[in-house]
Length: 293
Image (cartoon, rainbow, N blue to C red):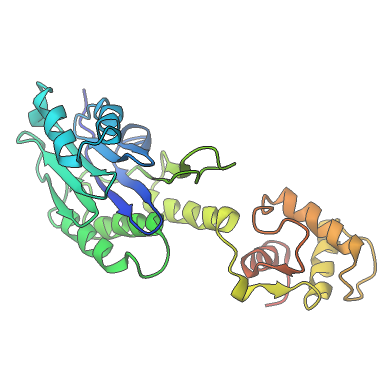
């Protein structure tokens, strides 16, 4: 068994009731191994000769009411190879705990803070400390849990990261009813399985997720009547509109825009019935198809 040498962070946002994990490693598809989370239970990062059963079993114990510390203590006590393991957990109430076995490869260690834990092995010293400091700085100051977790990863990489290099990264965030369609908790599950700069690519994917599924900021929404001419010009370029460029956001223009928005998977941001359009959608269309600055 090869060690899952990595750095990760588990975290909790009490305001949105979200639990999450972010991870980076010189290991292919690390998110499929390290990251586990369940709304109302908690989150788990299992690494360093990872015992994958720590994921489901840790969540099961926390869902039944165990604290993160108790769940870790129980699992470690039952594992004969505990000295090789590393794990971080945050429980249903946001309490965090972590464990680093005495035989994990240097540098290995963890930091536990309020509602989060950072852990890593085979690292350049200072990586975990940088992650912790960044998370403390950014959380609650704009963005959401996924942004804070990925920012912590980026800080860890800047501080040195995995001594062997980098290959994959992932971020997983859950909340009750937060998944697509509202009947599951998997709000966000993004993975970069093999890439020369995995955290940079993960940040790009996260920005795309915000575009496609983020909440519309009504304070920055733009009247469709005000930008009707520009939208008609864009729709002419894409072949969705063949009428006059007259600045009238009529039904033909609306239908054409609805078709383009659907093709671009932006219907979560504009359903086709509103009198305004999200500025993020408008800027996306401008950038991709050309439009006014």
